[in-house]
Length: 361
Image 1 (cartoon, rainbow, N blue to C red):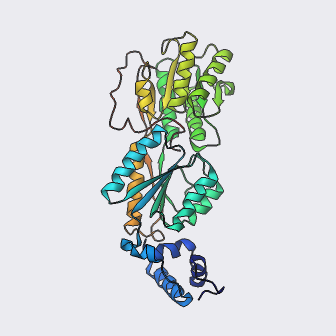
Image 2: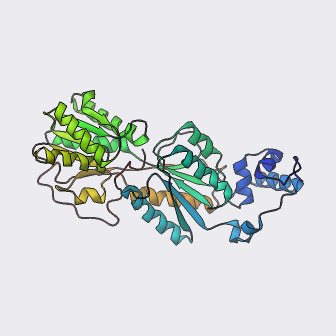
Image 3: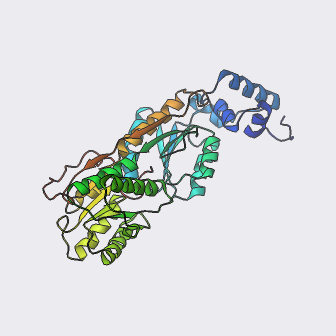
């Protein structure tokens, strides 16, 4: 029996064994742990009279054969591209994929990590746009394997796949400068998000590298949506009529900015160039077609799914250091910055990303 008189729990087993709650969960669910950890947990469970859940035990290998993908907005094309790739990898391995839209609510993101202890799925791919100390704490105690699509501090022992938004932003601004633009404004999303912060850093570094002036009042940072892009572009053009380019932190912002430019009777790119990030289907459908930075959403989804399956296949979370990998950004030049550029053909599932907040980093 448990020390408290009630049925034993993973908490009481962890206390008796002197290991973490996450370690107990991994042992009991057959996810994999060091042999000495397995012995400690099994001995503590036996001493406390732990009886495995009959439903869980009836599943082959103690698995649900389900994975969860939690993202900000299930309707955002950037995540749709990821879903397609994650699902393809999961299906090939015999897993179903559950989708969860968090609306970037931190408590919801933390709850979905904690829900791994409920055994509704065997592992989680989480795509947050903010990383808080609470995220780090909950991720470090996760009851099952988690892969984050986004940036994590180096000492956090959780696998992660990230985009290089800093390098991607530099590519876009350097391209605008190469086409003769010198007064380049930034239209961004919230700076307290990972993508908002990193894309601004890339913008600033590119201006410094190019010897171009930085005017803080030529930046706008509100939300990552089309309406925000349109409003910001109108404000910037009212205040800085000499602007000759907009660098936008995602494609939705860029499309909103393009709408404002058209509304003012200006031409793209002759009067003002517009560049975005994500290289979504929206970028290809815009007129003129939108120059954008491909941040590799398809690649990130595929890598995250494979990392998660590696852990489920027996890679020891305690013995193996957290893995980090980064998708290399690629600039796709179209007519919004270069009138001579051909319209790029659509690729499978778009070019890999979509609009919205992007997928972190």
